Image (cartoon, rainbow, N blue to C red):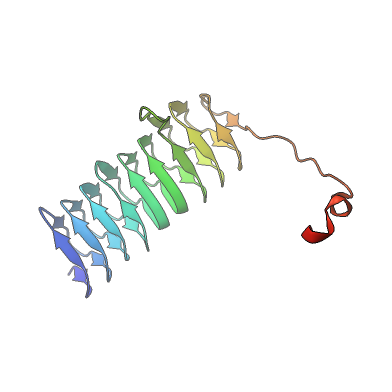
Length: 187
């Protein structure tokens, strides 16, 4: 009872389980798709999606990625060389590269796993039940403990222990009267 809509391209050694939905314009290459998986207009290459997980629309699962059971990968998400534990959610507009995420993690919108220092790739590890706020940069190599939080807008460069919150941002400062200091051509 798997449904494969028009415009889907299946390449190489691809296996798709039962009761799946593979939406139009998806491409799957050399990948294993479990049972009851939903793929909506996304690309999957050399990756694995476990039972009851979903991806898309407009997301990309790149080589060496393993997605656990009941994982949600929303729109405009790229996952590369990473593992996502069961019940983890990566809603939208996010890059997860070279990372190992545990179970039941929420990754906020606009999060970037910064894995490349200009010479080498590094890995990040995120513990079970952690919460990553929106617009966070996780600079690998770094480890986030279990039940940890990352405050929205933070750039995380150091390990965060179990049950702690990592916050790395400056306090807001307002510059009163700034409009009046602009030259007339900028107003």
